Length: 370
Image 1 (spheres, rainbow, N blue to C red):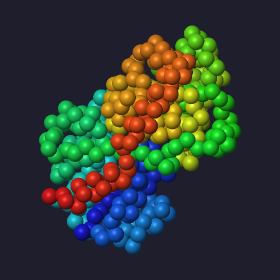
Image 2: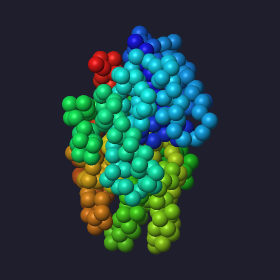
Image 3: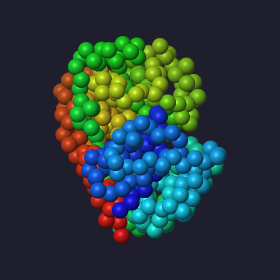
């Protein structure tokens, strides 16, 4: 069987959740399957790792003269003239021209829940792409039961067409490193302990402004001595986040460190007293599992998939309730027993999530596609 995979987002240089999902699946497929032939479609010069996947993996660079519509233009042409037996698209933008057997992963529909965070053009394209996927892909993978219900709610998708396959977490990589390595990483970023950590895109959807307000209240009401460390690239609404930091009376203790390469993440998680992922909307929420694996207590939003993913190992709060965020955070910071309990629940929770299981289920779904 020839399995075509849209590897364009796996080829991204600065990877976040969806990009890591795509990249990890490719590596796992190469470990699992030496029999089927794989064609990896990329738009630009591929990551060198793509050439080390195995003899049954072929990388095809599909050049396109404009910066937009690669999926519908160049990938669609490839499907018309040289189509594989089955096409797997790890994000929901399938080409209009595609094989009869096409599977896609729909991660979330945040553009429906928060349309104001997207331009009119972005909203229209996302909606068109999702409608196409729901209508024309013969199978859909999604990453949580929350996301499955959202896809059904907004697009009246057939529930039997959608399967939930959870992401995994690399428990060997995401574990608590030696203190010397933690100290080296904190020195690299010029971070002073103690600190509260957020990792993710710095955008309005991530609810950063309310987290800054809660940090201000923790400082004012409870006199904590922590820094707030924000790791991630700027996104939509980042200017408002900068303004919120600038007007904070504790701005000297709010540190932005930009995009964080994966090699530093275990030490950053492990060095934090608390990990905040109090976002407005998530289809899954990988950073929650990564922090839990590093034995860091997590506070997360109760408004999306994070309750499902975090299990008993997260302190749940309403993302718009600054007083509640403050209270729950201080309860954990000030009570060693509560902190230890949350850490233990987190370590139990991550046992439910495994990349090998994710890859095996996904590959079985692709190969047995009817």
